Length: 129
Image 1 (cartoon, rainbow, N blue to C red):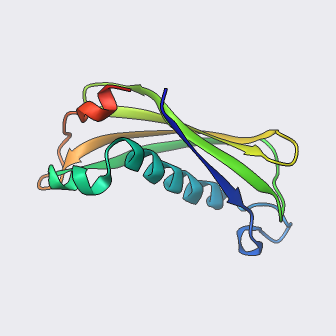
Image 2 (image 1 turned 60 degrees about the horizontal axis):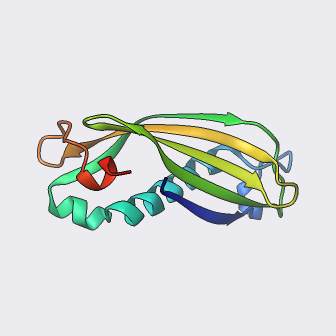
């Protein structure tokens, strides 16, 4: 199974008034991981040359443990399942300090044709996963 990993550093601007990682930061980090995952399978520039682009329809996330500054989290993402046009990615964040999973997520999406935004067949590179 292909997956990507990245180490994220909690910065002062990532925390809320209680000193805890703002939930919205996880969404931004999921976007970073999704971009890294796509680049490892089919670079977005290549997909765009083919006239297709990935788009998300839903993100589900469970916040399991609070995270504080200056924690570091290991983020991971991979393909959970796919159909003819749709895909589901999983994401997970683990604290480097305690090895505890702090959040788990799923992202649901589909490739669409750029010209009309209708669903496109999932690229072969993703089907092979």
